Image (spheres, rainbow, N blue to C red):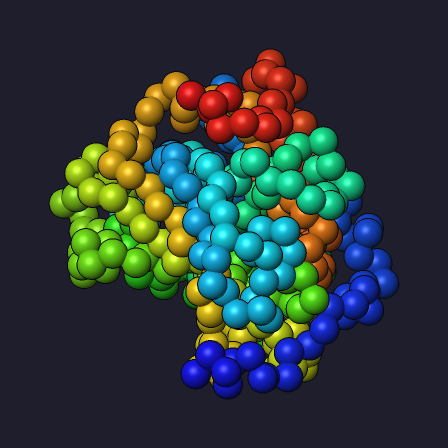
Length: 358
Protein backbone atom coordinates (compact mmCIF):
# COMPACT_ATOMS: atom_id res chain seq x y z
CA UNK A 1 0.00 0.00 0.00
CA UNK A 2 2.72 2.49 1.02
CA UNK A 3 4.68 1.67 -2.13
CA UNK A 4 1.59 2.26 -4.28
CA UNK A 5 1.00 5.64 -2.66
CA UNK A 6 4.65 6.62 -3.09
CA UNK A 7 4.47 5.96 -6.84
CA UNK A 8 1.38 8.03 -7.65
CA UNK A 9 1.62 10.97 -10.10
CA UNK A 10 1.60 13.80 -7.57
CA UNK A 11 1.57 17.29 -9.06
CA UNK A 12 4.72 19.27 -8.28
CA UNK A 13 4.18 22.66 -6.69
CA UNK A 14 5.05 25.72 -8.76
CA UNK A 15 3.84 29.29 -8.62
CA UNK A 16 1.76 28.84 -11.77
CA UNK A 17 -0.69 26.42 -10.08
CA UNK A 18 -2.43 29.61 -8.94
CA UNK A 19 -4.46 31.55 -11.52
CA UNK A 20 -5.57 34.86 -10.03
CA UNK A 21 -8.72 36.13 -11.78
CA UNK A 22 -9.21 39.72 -12.92
CA UNK A 23 -10.90 41.94 -10.36
CA UNK A 24 -10.00 39.77 -7.38
CA UNK A 25 -8.15 42.51 -5.49
CA UNK A 26 -11.18 44.81 -5.69
CA UNK A 27 -13.49 42.01 -4.54
CA UNK A 28 -11.25 41.23 -1.57
CA UNK A 29 -11.15 44.87 -0.50
CA UNK A 30 -14.97 44.97 -0.52
CA UNK A 31 -15.14 41.69 1.42
CA UNK A 32 -12.88 43.06 4.15
CA UNK A 33 -15.27 45.99 4.52
CA UNK A 34 -18.26 43.62 4.64
CA UNK A 35 -16.66 41.54 7.39
CA UNK A 36 -16.02 44.72 9.36
CA UNK A 37 -19.71 45.62 8.90
CA UNK A 38 -20.70 42.26 10.45
CA UNK A 39 -18.31 42.85 13.33
CA UNK A 40 -19.73 46.31 13.98
CA UNK A 41 -23.26 44.89 14.04
CA UNK A 42 -22.20 42.37 16.70
CA UNK A 43 -20.48 45.15 18.65
CA UNK A 44 -23.74 47.09 18.62
CA UNK A 45 -25.48 44.08 20.21
CA UNK A 46 -22.82 42.98 22.70
CA UNK A 47 -20.66 46.10 23.18
CA UNK A 48 -17.70 43.84 22.43
CA UNK A 49 -16.15 43.19 19.03
CA UNK A 50 -15.57 39.61 17.88
CA UNK A 51 -13.99 38.10 14.79
CA UNK A 52 -16.11 38.19 11.64
CA UNK A 53 -16.33 34.38 11.62
CA UNK A 54 -15.77 31.66 14.25
CA UNK A 55 -16.88 34.09 16.94
CA UNK A 56 -18.17 31.54 19.47
CA UNK A 57 -15.42 29.81 21.46
CA UNK A 58 -16.28 26.26 22.52
CA UNK A 59 -12.99 25.21 24.08
CA UNK A 60 -9.23 25.77 24.21
CA UNK A 61 -6.64 23.09 24.92
CA UNK A 62 -2.89 22.58 24.99
CA UNK A 63 -1.03 19.52 23.79
CA UNK A 64 1.63 18.32 21.40
CA UNK A 65 1.97 17.77 17.64
CA UNK A 66 4.01 14.62 17.09
CA UNK A 67 5.70 13.73 13.79
CA UNK A 68 6.98 10.14 13.53
CA UNK A 69 10.54 9.47 12.43
CA UNK A 70 9.57 6.77 9.94
CA UNK A 71 7.53 8.70 7.36
CA UNK A 72 8.20 7.54 3.79
CA UNK A 73 10.57 9.87 1.98
CA UNK A 74 7.92 11.42 -0.27
CA UNK A 75 5.99 12.60 2.82
CA UNK A 76 9.04 14.18 4.48
CA UNK A 77 8.09 17.57 3.06
CA UNK A 78 9.18 20.87 4.58
CA UNK A 79 10.73 21.55 7.95
CA UNK A 80 7.85 20.14 10.02
CA UNK A 81 7.97 16.66 8.50
CA UNK A 82 11.58 16.15 7.44
CA UNK A 83 12.34 14.22 10.65
CA UNK A 84 10.63 12.99 13.78
CA UNK A 85 9.82 15.80 16.22
CA UNK A 86 7.34 17.24 18.71
CA UNK A 87 5.89 20.74 18.83
CA UNK A 88 3.82 22.30 21.63
CA UNK A 89 0.37 23.25 20.35
CA UNK A 90 -2.56 25.33 21.56
CA UNK A 91 -5.92 24.84 19.86
CA UNK A 92 -9.38 26.37 19.84
CA UNK A 93 -12.75 24.76 19.08
CA UNK A 94 -15.34 27.18 17.68
CA UNK A 95 -18.67 27.64 15.94
CA UNK A 96 -18.17 29.14 12.50
CA UNK A 97 -20.65 32.04 12.12
CA UNK A 98 -19.86 35.53 13.36
CA UNK A 99 -22.49 35.52 16.13
CA UNK A 100 -20.88 34.72 19.52
CA UNK A 101 -24.30 33.99 21.01
CA UNK A 102 -25.41 31.44 18.42
CA UNK A 103 -27.36 28.61 20.04
CA UNK A 104 -25.42 25.32 19.95
CA UNK A 105 -28.61 23.54 18.92
CA UNK A 106 -28.46 25.39 15.60
CA UNK A 107 -26.63 23.09 13.21
CA UNK A 108 -23.79 25.04 11.59
CA UNK A 109 -20.19 24.30 10.59
CA UNK A 110 -17.73 24.09 13.46
CA UNK A 111 -14.11 25.15 13.45
CA UNK A 112 -10.78 24.11 14.89
CA UNK A 113 -7.60 26.17 14.81
CA UNK A 114 -4.17 25.50 16.23
CA UNK A 115 -0.84 27.20 16.65
CA UNK A 116 2.36 25.13 16.71
CA UNK A 117 5.40 26.48 18.58
CA UNK A 118 9.18 25.96 18.41
CA UNK A 119 9.00 25.97 14.61
CA UNK A 120 12.20 26.64 12.69
CA UNK A 121 12.84 27.28 9.01
CA UNK A 122 12.07 29.62 6.12
CA UNK A 123 8.94 31.61 6.98
CA UNK A 124 6.40 33.42 4.84
CA UNK A 125 6.85 37.18 4.89
CA UNK A 126 3.72 37.93 6.95
CA UNK A 127 4.83 35.68 9.79
CA UNK A 128 8.59 35.93 9.56
CA UNK A 129 8.89 37.38 13.07
CA UNK A 130 6.83 34.62 14.73
CA UNK A 131 8.27 31.07 14.97
CA UNK A 132 4.85 29.38 14.75
CA UNK A 133 2.89 27.34 12.24
CA UNK A 134 -0.77 28.32 12.25
CA UNK A 135 -3.25 25.75 10.95
CA UNK A 136 -7.02 26.13 10.65
CA UNK A 137 -9.88 23.75 9.91
CA UNK A 138 -13.62 23.61 9.26
CA UNK A 139 -16.02 20.70 9.76
CA UNK A 140 -17.29 20.89 6.16
CA UNK A 141 -14.88 19.55 3.51
CA UNK A 142 -15.98 22.03 0.81
CA UNK A 143 -15.87 25.79 1.33
CA UNK A 144 -19.09 27.60 0.38
CA UNK A 145 -17.14 30.87 0.05
CA UNK A 146 -15.29 29.11 -2.74
CA UNK A 147 -13.51 32.09 -4.32
CA UNK A 148 -13.45 35.86 -3.89
CA UNK A 149 -16.31 36.57 -6.30
CA UNK A 150 -18.56 33.99 -4.62
CA UNK A 151 -17.57 35.27 -1.19
CA UNK A 152 -18.59 38.84 -2.02
CA UNK A 153 -21.95 37.71 -3.40
CA UNK A 154 -22.79 35.37 -0.52
CA UNK A 155 -21.73 37.68 2.29
CA UNK A 156 -23.79 40.45 0.69
CA UNK A 157 -26.84 38.14 0.75
CA UNK A 158 -26.20 37.12 4.36
CA UNK A 159 -25.93 40.75 5.46
CA UNK A 160 -29.20 41.60 3.70
CA UNK A 161 -31.25 38.49 4.49
CA UNK A 162 -29.42 36.61 7.25
CA UNK A 163 -32.28 37.22 9.66
CA UNK A 164 -34.85 35.77 7.26
CA UNK A 165 -33.90 32.27 6.12
CA UNK A 166 -36.80 31.88 3.68
CA UNK A 167 -35.84 35.10 1.91
CA UNK A 168 -32.16 34.13 1.93
CA UNK A 169 -33.02 30.74 0.46
CA UNK A 170 -35.14 32.39 -2.23
CA UNK A 171 -32.04 34.21 -3.43
CA UNK A 172 -29.74 31.22 -3.00
CA UNK A 173 -32.06 29.06 -5.09
CA UNK A 174 -31.41 31.33 -8.05
CA UNK A 175 -27.72 30.37 -7.95
CA UNK A 176 -26.05 27.41 -9.65
CA UNK A 177 -24.16 26.63 -6.43
CA UNK A 178 -27.29 26.52 -4.29
CA UNK A 179 -26.62 22.99 -2.88
CA UNK A 180 -23.17 24.10 -1.73
CA UNK A 181 -24.59 27.23 -0.08
CA UNK A 182 -27.37 25.34 1.73
CA UNK A 183 -25.08 22.53 2.90
CA UNK A 184 -23.96 24.52 5.96
CA UNK A 185 -27.51 24.31 7.37
CA UNK A 186 -27.62 20.52 7.07
CA UNK A 187 -24.49 19.47 8.96
CA UNK A 188 -24.63 16.72 11.57
CA UNK A 189 -24.65 18.47 14.96
CA UNK A 190 -22.59 16.40 17.34
CA UNK A 191 -19.76 16.39 19.86
CA UNK A 192 -16.86 18.55 18.65
CA UNK A 193 -14.23 16.14 19.88
CA UNK A 194 -15.66 13.49 17.54
CA UNK A 195 -15.89 15.76 14.48
CA UNK A 196 -13.55 15.55 11.50
CA UNK A 197 -12.07 18.90 10.52
CA UNK A 198 -10.88 19.85 7.03
CA UNK A 199 -8.59 22.43 5.47
CA UNK A 200 -11.18 23.11 2.72
CA UNK A 201 -8.54 25.04 0.74
CA UNK A 202 -5.27 23.97 -0.85
CA UNK A 203 -1.78 24.47 0.54
CA UNK A 204 1.73 23.82 -0.57
CA UNK A 205 3.24 20.66 0.92
CA UNK A 206 6.94 21.08 0.18
CA UNK A 207 7.41 19.75 -3.36
CA UNK A 208 3.68 19.00 -3.70
CA UNK A 209 0.17 20.44 -3.13
CA UNK A 210 -2.17 19.29 -0.39
CA UNK A 211 -5.39 19.56 1.48
CA UNK A 212 -5.44 18.19 5.02
CA UNK A 213 -7.82 16.72 7.59
CA UNK A 214 -7.92 16.20 11.35
CA UNK A 215 -9.33 12.79 12.31
CA UNK A 216 -10.46 11.86 15.85
CA UNK A 217 -8.37 8.83 16.72
CA UNK A 218 -9.46 7.35 20.05
CA UNK A 219 -12.31 4.90 20.54
CA UNK A 220 -13.78 7.24 23.16
CA UNK A 221 -13.92 10.09 20.64
CA UNK A 222 -15.41 7.91 17.92
CA UNK A 223 -18.21 6.77 20.24
CA UNK A 224 -19.09 10.39 21.00
CA UNK A 225 -20.05 10.83 17.35
CA UNK A 226 -23.23 8.83 17.99
CA UNK A 227 -24.59 11.61 20.20
CA UNK A 228 -26.53 14.23 18.24
CA UNK A 229 -27.44 17.58 19.78
CA UNK A 230 -31.11 17.70 20.86
CA UNK A 231 -33.32 20.55 22.01
CA UNK A 232 -33.28 19.28 25.60
CA UNK A 233 -29.49 19.56 25.76
CA UNK A 234 -29.59 23.37 26.04
CA UNK A 235 -28.05 26.28 24.17
CA UNK A 236 -24.48 25.75 25.46
CA UNK A 237 -24.17 21.97 25.21
CA UNK A 238 -21.11 21.86 22.94
CA UNK A 239 -18.70 23.51 25.37
CA UNK A 240 -20.15 21.49 28.28
CA UNK A 241 -19.62 18.25 26.39
CA UNK A 242 -16.05 19.30 25.61
CA UNK A 243 -15.33 20.21 29.24
CA UNK A 244 -16.53 16.83 30.46
CA UNK A 245 -14.65 14.86 27.82
CA UNK A 246 -11.36 16.78 28.00
CA UNK A 247 -11.40 16.67 31.80
CA UNK A 248 -11.66 12.89 31.89
CA UNK A 249 -9.96 11.59 28.74
CA UNK A 250 -6.92 12.10 26.58
CA UNK A 251 -7.92 13.29 23.10
CA UNK A 252 -5.90 12.28 20.05
CA UNK A 253 -6.20 13.28 16.42
CA UNK A 254 -4.48 12.15 13.24
CA UNK A 255 -3.20 14.91 10.98
CA UNK A 256 -3.48 13.63 7.41
CA UNK A 257 -2.60 15.12 4.05
CA UNK A 258 -4.26 14.56 0.67
CA UNK A 259 -1.92 15.19 -2.25
CA UNK A 260 -2.97 16.71 -5.56
CA UNK A 261 -2.72 14.50 -8.65
CA UNK A 262 -5.08 16.25 -11.09
CA UNK A 263 -5.53 20.02 -11.13
CA UNK A 264 -8.82 19.76 -13.02
CA UNK A 265 -10.36 17.24 -10.62
CA UNK A 266 -8.63 18.78 -7.58
CA UNK A 267 -8.82 22.53 -8.22
CA UNK A 268 -6.59 24.90 -6.29
CA UNK A 269 -8.46 28.12 -7.04
CA UNK A 270 -12.03 26.94 -6.43
CA UNK A 271 -12.52 25.57 -2.90
CA UNK A 272 -16.14 24.52 -3.37
CA UNK A 273 -15.19 21.11 -4.80
CA UNK A 274 -14.25 18.20 -2.56
CA UNK A 275 -11.11 16.32 -3.54
CA UNK A 276 -12.56 12.81 -3.63
CA UNK A 277 -10.82 10.84 -0.84
CA UNK A 278 -11.62 7.54 -2.55
CA UNK A 279 -9.57 8.59 -5.58
CA UNK A 280 -7.00 10.66 -3.68
CA UNK A 281 -6.49 9.11 -0.24
CA UNK A 282 -5.50 10.92 2.93
CA UNK A 283 -2.19 9.87 4.48
CA UNK A 284 -1.19 10.28 8.13
CA UNK A 285 1.88 12.44 8.79
CA UNK A 286 1.43 13.42 12.46
CA UNK A 287 -0.63 12.92 15.60
CA UNK A 288 -1.96 15.60 17.97
CA UNK A 289 -2.32 14.62 21.61
CA UNK A 290 -4.22 16.60 24.26
CA UNK A 291 -3.86 15.24 27.82
CA UNK A 292 -6.80 15.56 30.23
CA UNK A 293 -7.35 19.22 31.17
CA UNK A 294 -9.85 22.03 31.69
CA UNK A 295 -10.98 23.02 28.18
CA UNK A 296 -12.89 26.19 29.10
CA UNK A 297 -10.44 28.19 31.16
CA UNK A 298 -11.87 31.71 31.27
CA UNK A 299 -8.52 33.48 31.34
CA UNK A 300 -7.29 31.51 28.33
CA UNK A 301 -10.54 32.15 26.47
CA UNK A 302 -10.35 35.91 26.98
CA UNK A 303 -6.64 36.03 26.13
CA UNK A 304 -7.24 34.22 22.83
CA UNK A 305 -10.29 36.29 21.87
CA UNK A 306 -8.88 39.65 22.92
CA UNK A 307 -5.25 39.29 21.85
CA UNK A 308 -4.56 36.29 19.58
CA UNK A 309 -5.37 35.20 16.07
CA UNK A 310 -4.55 32.19 13.93
CA UNK A 311 -3.50 33.12 10.42
CA UNK A 312 -2.42 30.54 7.79
CA UNK A 313 0.02 33.15 6.44
CA UNK A 314 1.92 32.84 9.73
CA UNK A 315 4.01 29.80 8.98
CA UNK A 316 6.63 28.20 6.79
CA UNK A 317 6.98 28.77 3.05
CA UNK A 318 6.84 24.99 2.59
CA UNK A 319 3.13 25.14 3.55
CA UNK A 320 2.11 28.34 1.75
CA UNK A 321 -1.65 28.87 1.49
CA UNK A 322 -2.86 28.60 -2.12
CA UNK A 323 -5.83 29.81 -4.14
CA UNK A 324 -8.29 32.68 -4.03
CA UNK A 325 -9.81 32.01 -0.59
CA UNK A 326 -6.34 32.06 0.97
CA UNK A 327 -5.33 35.23 -0.86
CA UNK A 328 -8.54 36.68 0.58
CA UNK A 329 -7.53 35.62 4.11
CA UNK A 330 -4.19 37.39 3.68
CA UNK A 331 -6.12 40.70 3.58
CA UNK A 332 -9.29 40.00 5.54
CA UNK A 333 -7.75 38.42 8.65
CA UNK A 334 -5.50 41.39 9.56
CA UNK A 335 -8.35 43.80 8.79
CA UNK A 336 -10.78 41.88 11.00
CA UNK A 337 -8.22 41.56 13.80
CA UNK A 338 -7.27 45.22 13.59
CA UNK A 339 -10.88 46.38 13.97
CA UNK A 340 -11.40 44.01 16.88
CA UNK A 341 -8.41 45.39 18.78
CA UNK A 342 -9.38 49.02 18.13
CA UNK A 343 -13.00 48.60 19.22
CA UNK A 344 -12.11 46.57 22.31
CA UNK A 345 -9.12 48.69 23.31
CA UNK A 346 -6.79 45.68 23.17
CA UNK A 347 -3.43 45.00 21.57
CA UNK A 348 -2.75 42.06 19.28
CA UNK A 349 -0.18 39.68 20.75
CA UNK A 350 1.58 37.37 18.34
CA UNK A 351 2.62 34.75 20.85
CA UNK A 352 5.92 32.99 20.17
CA UNK A 353 5.93 30.56 23.12
CA UNK A 354 3.12 28.39 24.42
CA UNK A 355 3.78 29.61 27.97
CA UNK A 356 2.59 33.05 26.90
CA UNK A 357 -0.90 31.55 26.60
CA UNK A 358 -2.59 31.19 30.03
